Image 1 (cartoon, rainbow, N blue to C red):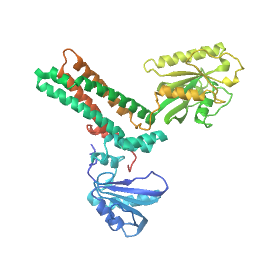
Image 2: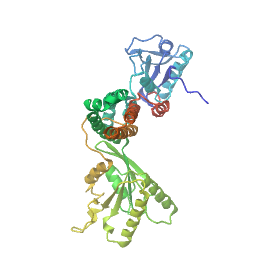
Image 3: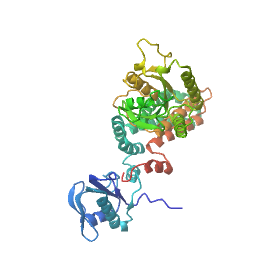
Length: 465
């Protein structure tokens, strides 16, 4: 079995994105900084001052010229001594500088950093908690302006502060219960005087607000997958193009034009929606089309929401109605174990004569992908399906694991309330539920967490971060 690298060894990596650019950065953190600076820069630069100098090869030649910055620990990103070398952003020159740093720091154990290891060091050295560390990656990966702003608030500690406030109230309540366990003859009066019921109720209400905000934050980060499905020539590709505002999918009058999925991410009020156009659903003898239809059903099975597109111009055709009914029945069977919202859309309203009857059903939406009529209403419906609620600027970004942890806290608090309000309240069980609730909270900020959880989180970061 291969041993994992030590978390105390000095590390180095290219900290900027792969490819060519005006500037690239090589970052070194740990005990090898002084040796690397002496070998590559000729001296240790003044703390926190940009110093222009040549970067030297082992034979004394110049690899490049640029800026060197030294951040003495603990006042650095990682909490350790950090050296950043800003050079020209060509991949070859950056690799040469990195190789020179690794060579110069070999005696001190300098090695190449793993993905996310600089931020992991920041977490381990108490520069960031786990939620803030995750916000670093979320800020880098943000696909919308709203997500970037919310990730910035999480990085600044807004989300962590709410979690810490919940934890402090929970600890206080635990203290009351644990103290009562030591004096069982006083338990009823003691808990009543301390208003344990009121404290627990207030804690649950506050948790509910945090859960709601976390759900919104997770939605900003993850978005939802929306699949456009229906019979051939219902206008699915036209709808994708209309929502995306670009000609992404081929549109022709020929049925079965779309043979494979076409995916585009759009945003509505900052919420990313991953919209998937699929092959028309029908019986076909064409082998290629059958493969596309099978893939369409696979996408429908993975969807968070389905836009079931109908053709208004064929509304009165018996065969078309029968085929739509068969598709609807098949969807219902596939969603028996996983309820998925299916929104009925009636397209080609622009092709109907004036005064023509419209389809019944309050949940149906009439639109025209060609003219754009009804698209704004569709966007509102999609936000409602996603569960989005317009939030003030104070929204922070959260991850699905945060939401799951908060749901676990809510479950433990409900169990605790049952033990507290019961006629024969079991204080030992009450204390245990409160302890489990606190543990669930702690996994969000990393105050309590297993090494395997940390490994999963930081392995998804980019190298150099």
